[in-house]
Length: 306
Image (cartoon, rainbow, N blue to C red; front, side, top):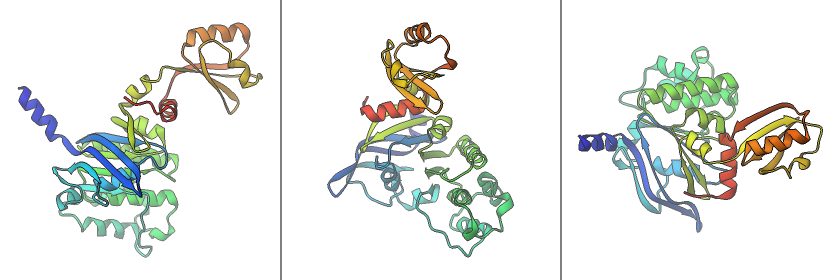
């Protein structure tokens, strides 16, 4: 029974990298990276600009070669015909012929694959039902993103790479994209997602890897990463200057946030007791555990590694 379970676990891995290293002009873009992407999983890669996220996707797509390490996609080398037939990609830099309509773009991309996704399904996932006859040259930035997403799924991919997919989208379009990603994941597609919207990773990712200067400094679920940050946030409105709250017990940092002041504390009870004894008339006071954004900022600034 144990062997059967191990075989199932192994067979669910559709992309992997072990010891992945890549340098440009002597500077390491990726440094000894290990990870696996499974079917039906959203694997999010977070990091500041220049951290190595796009390099990682380009290696998995076979667009560039690693210097060291083993990279496999569907059991084959990255960029192989077998891998290309089962993968889709939405990259940050993409140019489209401006003389084609949305419908024509999608039908053209469908023709590249032996078993494409149904046309109606593609436009529903991308939220393009009312725009099928629009020319791509007339699309806004967010609308172009939706078209690029549509093209990335035309081949009915088992592995989908999404590099900053919701840039330029309005709230409604972004919510539609998120639902499409959830539906694809439920259908068994493995998804590698890079994003600057931490809310996006928090909502979608089964596993998150935080990359800093080419190294994975933390990996786990959103809940695990947030739990690794010990501080709690206390937010309120006050006429006092933010710095007057710095001496309060167990306060780690103080930040103005619009009309609010936000304290990060290692012990919410001690800080609150002291805060309210000195400033009993604070308005709109809330207490919350650290979110993914706070975890990202703290880990990225500290460079902590596990």
